[in-house]
Length: 533
Image (cartoon, rainbow, N blue to C red; front, side, top):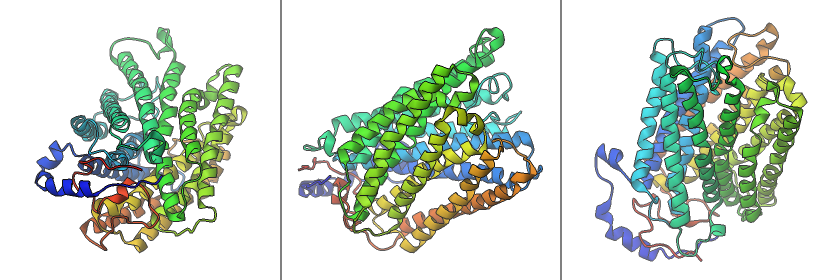
């Protein structure tokens, strides 16, 4: 996408608005309605949650370093596996993408701010309180949630700890925040695009977020319904998921995965947009097949609603149901394949350079494809009977989510950091962060394929002797990947505090409205809409 802009009026407007800069002190952050401030708060919050969830993963890997019970008791181990999943999904990945959307979407479409700035402030400030409520359950009598991040009933309703009620309230609040953020993003993209910015001229990051926002609005109420039914079963004597009262525990799985499968794509689609911005920049070629990328994203979003029961092949659904969900799941590989083909073709015979954002993006394409292939294996119903609930599944979804979501977020931060701070980050340190993360991630999750195929069940604190070597390798990789993220924190802080001054167009070959602004981006941008030709 090429954008030619009239920035003269914009710069004059910025000079005119100098006295409308940010307020001073703490209240600036509490009361701000500026999309850049709120985007920054989302990103910092998600990084704190990333380190918190990562610390829990370190507890898990430390316990699994050797067979036998070493460090924690089995009940606390279950709390760690549950909270690690919940915090990474609802606290780290989703808020990070919303932060990137807040920062970049108004700039990319030439809008002055988000469409609903006060609601934007509110949707952020719900998050820290919801997260504190979720984490506080660990200190309550009976401990925190211990039933897996999928909180299957009746494990969570009949057998869960008393803190389950707090967990339900936290999930409700996180969902409300997500829905408000999604409404805001849709309103902004549909109503505030600059003149000449047609839908098919929007950067792919904007497109992927528009589709993701519709997914959020569709599935978050389903999750709210599931946890409300749990609450009723626990406190009000209903039997939605209790077979003894005429309910059905499998009903919970249907409701949960009707939310849960589109949720996986909510955590992946914005990554597709990020990588589609970065690969053309460093290959110095336009993105191959822009239109097909838009339609492929929409197809993935549609298909994500009709494959939920592939998580449930072993519950005893009818054969015709298994066949339907098996073929529908395989079908998702087609639009995903279109995307991978387009990314590879974009790089093919390009004048590629390998700065840190490009390294993370290439790793994303390669490793996400590996995760996709193991997903195809899991989609085959008879084979899934062997893979189900083993470490093979853990390997699969971490190959999708760690490179798919986390690596893409790293790529985005390195790519836009000069635009945010006005400084270039330290490239040598950035590449060090990439290689340590890449090696650590593969050391952690690749061996899990083998122990899973050999039959090691997931979510267990102890295991048979034959799995010891691969678990030790995985734990070493996990600690390597985890501690490397402190280097990332150092790189970001070092970049904020100073460094080589960034140009307006920080990367040679970068296209889009954001690169027409000075670096760092002014507090108020596009008070006069740019003209996109």
